[in-house]
Length: 359
Image 1 (tube, rainbow, N blue to C red):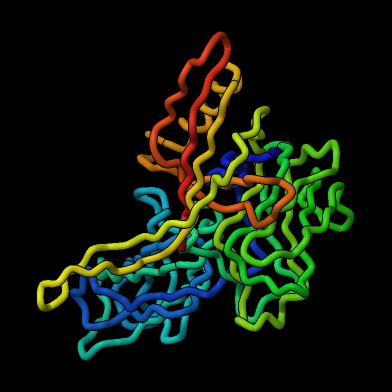
Image 2: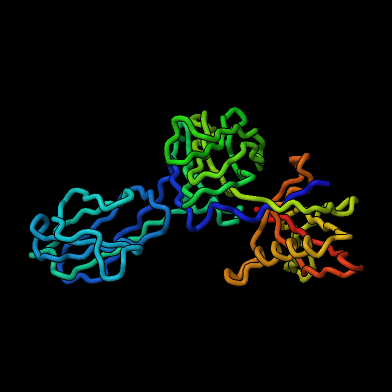
C-alpha cells in the first residue's frame, strides 16, 4: 500500500510569512516603571504584530504634555537601541507600530514628566501566522474579521525549493471557497508560474503537487470567497508545504488502525474510583518486514528528525496511510522505540507505532 510520512515542512522559523490579514490582538495597560513626575502614559490600539512584544516609552526631555519629549522601544529592538527618540508628547495618540499607540496626560504637579520616567505595556498576539507551523493543533492563525477576499499567504523560502505536498489542517474554510497554491520566481502574482487548485475537504485538505519542474522561492496560498465565512474569520491550525517520505515497502496489510480512549483515574467524594474520559483518538501500529538496510536508514532518519533532542520535543508528523484514501491522513506522534530486527542479509523487520495528535 502506498503510504507517506510528511515531516519536512519548508515553512518554519526562517521563512518570511506575509499574510493578507491577521486577527487584531490586545494591548495591555501601561505599567509605570519609573514615575518621578505626576504625569501618565496611556497605551491603546489593536495590535497586529506576529509576536508578543513589551513596549517601553521613556521621557527624554522633562516638561508638560507638548513640551516633554519621549523615546520608545520594544522587546525585539536591539539592546541599547531605541526605535525613535525626541518625539513630542501629546494628549492625542501617537502611533508606534503594528497598531500600538500612546498618549500622555498631565498630572497634579508641574512639570508632569521628569527625565527618565518610564512606562511599559505588553502587546499579545495569540493568532499569529507563526501558529501555522508550531505543530500544535490547539493553536491557530486567524484572519481579520471579516475576512478579505481573497485571504492570502506569501511564503519567502529564501531560495528556490520544490515541495511535493500541501496540507491545510484544522481549518474552518467553507466548502464553497476557492483554494489555490501558487508559486513564482518573484513576489509578483499577476501570472504565477505555478497555479494549482486545491480540492476542498473538511478537517484536513491534502494536495500533492503535479506541476514539473516546480522549484521556486516564492509560494502563495490563496483562499477566495470567504468574506462571508459564518465564523466571521478564517482559521488554520497547521499548514504544511514540503516533501514526503514514501517507503519502498508497504506495511503488512491487516487492520493496523485502532481507536483508543484517553482516560484519567479520579476518586469521588466517597472514595470510589472512577475513570474520566478525556478524549478519543486513533492509534496505528505499522508492521514492516523484508526492509533493506538503505530503507531502514531512511526510517531511522525520520525517527531522529521528529525525536528532536535540540528542541527537547517529540514533534508530530503527518501520516497518510493510504494515499488513495483522504480519511487515512492524520497528525500523529511516533510512540515507542525504533528497534529493527535483522532477519537476514539486507533484511530487517520492525514496527512503527503512531498516536494521533488531538486537539
